[in-house]
Length: 628
Image (cartoon, rainbow, N blue to C red; front, side, top):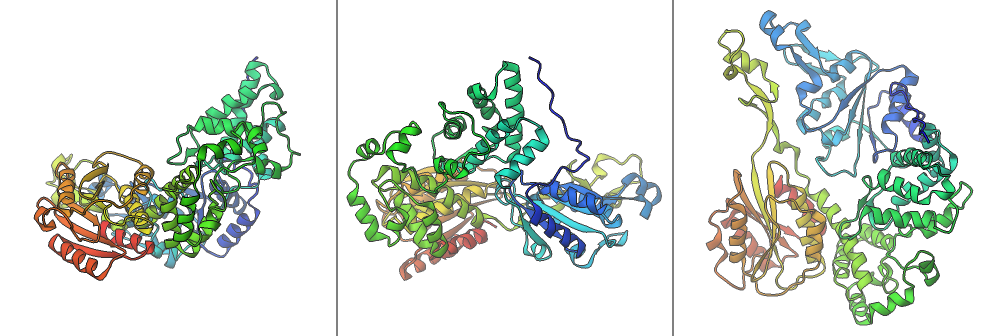
């Protein structure tokens, strides 16, 4: 049976804005009152559609700029045409406007996508534009923005790959509108508007997609774009196979795997494939013995069936377990064995234990989130200890949560200052042409020789950093949490200019993250939360292990960050192992007076600095100072 081709919307016509009435009103008023804005939200929440719709209503043009690490000031502002300058000099007509000047001169909206991917040096050119409505361009003069100019930026705050914090100087000059996923009925309307498909297919697709955002084993769910693709694939497959939706459950499974498996992300530490999670969600939304879901079905019933809706680790009743094909609770409890001793120990050690784990095998993530907001140190210490609980189900849930929480804290803390990369003149045949320096070198012969050309490119000092985590002594609770967050921060800080590695040590050294090899920060955290203090402290052996990691690196500076109290109890003196290490910094966790003195002395001998870490809140700024 032939497949009817889907209707492709005209990209020049802004799509309908569904479910964003309040955000639309805020954006409209902000533009009318001469405010600049940043639209913040995950992919698929309608940021671009919302802006284009409002711009079409007001009759304003939108100048689109894709933000990335290669967006230089010259590419944003504009530049002189080199051949025209060589022929006629620095005349205004020889200047080619970039998107910023195009928008400023033409009463347009400058739309910067991926604001947090743009280098700080490029963002800094916007400061005067946002405040004074003008910009001074060398040799061209001052360009004033017309009254209709506005800057609208968009960013996804949940994406950490290739992003950095937006400086306060920019953030202070812009309003912020946060967009979330639309309600279910709004998402159905969006899918219907794009696909024009049967209502039953749309209901199924939207239910499946929304369930991916709540499932306990998924770190990231799908946006409404996944529902659109799912409907189009499902409709086409049903037509091709000559099926109706009611008899096409396996066809829905095939379409869901193709449309959603690449969009969802399984939580680190969970040994499942995306397809297995989607199969579980399909079983919950559309059980094998039932008809496809319809629009009248109670949403609360669906939410009660979904594994992640409660924010707790699995703990269903025996009846619910049978309906979902899971083992009854009594069977699982029998496999767990007695764990009363472990729970008593946790209760004695942590006041909030009973609230966070009210029953055997349960971890209430909402209660933990509340504790994290009220007392981050107590929450982190509890989570680190739960990751080694004797209760197997609780331990598994705690490790999954620890991978998410400690990596997120490390991601915030490890963000380095943007000034580490800068535009400099170079002789390499890449980047933007530096016209002034080229003219200074030009011999007058045409065409200019390659050696006469000077370009501007991003550069920065190359460093190799090794984090040494002391696992000796009384390594537990908050100490483990600090170590896990520090490791996550160091691993996440790696880029083309910063190579990182992570080692642990007591009287022996173990490599968790080899230098120059990619390993997920979540995996490193999972290794660290399983550690507990044992053995003597041989800092000299640890430094020699770090040196072995750093020596092969192609780097201008080899740095060791030692997370320890600096008190050796075995081996040679630590200062005897500093050869081959350019700089040694010491992070001193939960320090005593004796530890502070030892750590300060060791850092001084290593040409570095000592940072005390008395609380989890101290760790982020300390890492930023050491890695920035």
